[in-house]
Image (cartoon, rainbow, N blue to C red; front, side, top):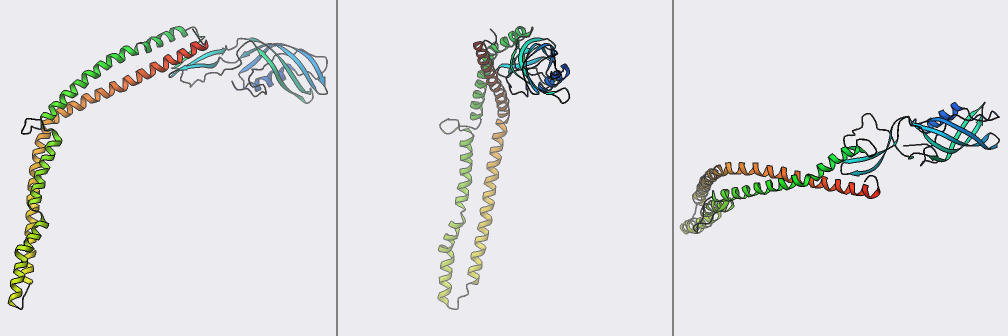
Length: 334
């Protein structure tokens, strides 16, 4: 509860003033209005008695005793357990409580007064705030409310039952995990076996198929072809031409370029052919295991949901138990 007084830790208020002999005593209305303003409208004054203690010029000191009441129910946080907040109702709306305090008043009837309160003693906790109309209280418990124990017992049982739910879901998780492992074995066996009868698996098959492509590419390697062509064809033809004199190298170079171009086309043709063959073979194998992968993904999705749910249940139950234990240790409730 926010109060604008110097004694901020206390709720201060007062009520109708005992009339003094001189006109320097604040009127009831002044005391009530100033108190209500200082309490941000959370408190209002009831019956009081006002006794003078000291007067110096236009400043006077009084003792006050009487009743004050809250304009709404006021609540203070006393603890938390996970997402649940525990409150104590510190003030009941319109329910007067006793108080005593000191009050100073500065001013006169003509200038009006400014009041201040201190040394406040109230027969209620001096903290609290009202709930707003838009506040979500679905996860709030009021420890001194008549329905608290029923609400608390229901939640406590709910979190206690979390362990049973977690154990059940862990068994479901283990069963699903076993099915996934069986599917993994089926998927692995679907890719064939090596010469020793050992399952190859997708990676082994891909490596073997890619090796076929690399073998064809190495066979038709352009650099190798160019080197061999230079040694076996181009250089002998050039030497023979130069021996005749007036050597025209244009036909020799044209033949070299044509041979290179034809080899390049052949390299591309054979590379594309083996690549298409391998791609088609892989597609057949993948289509074979596709239903197995689809089933595996569905099982893994169920496992993720169970794993996440178990984590949240265990976390929430732990936070609840720790929060409740701490509040019991502090004596918030038994």
